[in-house]
Amino acid sequence: MKWLLDQKIERFKNALMKMGWFAEKMMIRVIESMENRQVATAKQVVEDDDVLDEMEVELRQEAAVILGTHAPTGFNLRFLISSVEVANIIEKIGDRTRRIAQILLSFYREQSANVDPKIIRMAKNVAGLLRETLGVMADMRSEAAFEICTKDDEIDEFFQDVRSEFINLLNEKPEQLERILWLLEIAHELEEIAGLCTNVVEAVLYAASGENYKCFKDRMRPLKGREGVLFDDSD
Image (cartoon, rainbow, N blue to C red; front, side, top):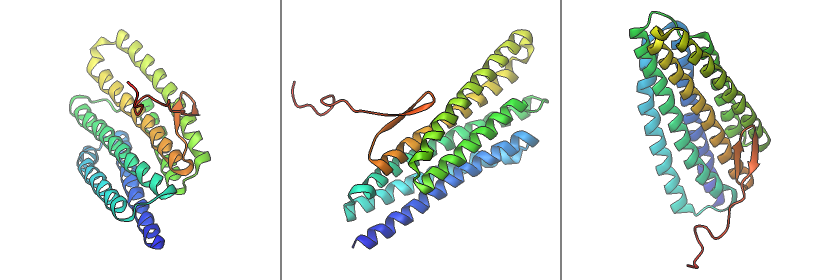
């Protein structure tokens, strides 16, 4: 019955990709809201996060059914285990995107100024990273996963530059405290989304190769587990 398991794995993968694309759509809507002060679009993102939460639960339940009825091994087993982790990470990306939308709604109510262009640029860079991450998921291309780590480091550096600039601005114009803090929080959430993208490709690398990797600074490094830490029977 291997053909049946392969069919269910492919169907599961398609569902996981739909979840990823839905998260990407949320990110695109956030950028549209930033560029045009679209209140309705930001509100839609907040509502979309509930849908993403339901998708994660559905995928987790389906994975349990497949594991329980087919007892997969090898790549299929690694793929299912990794996919449950990926679904959880995508759900977290949705949470961060929703938070950005909520900040934007507060920003629009209290501020007449538009979102700083640097924040919009950072959001577009993060959206591009998320799209590349979904491409790695779709093709299971382990070599492309290493590039995500490098680009995440570039976004981290961009965040540090923005953070320094806004802190300096805060010293110069303390009357803009609320605006600057909101923009800094958006930038922080964007940085966190980029970091979550590296977690996704770490899981993809495990599924594809059976090896554990961790993104550290600008490089994806093999992660060698220490033996005898959790499952050592000796006292």
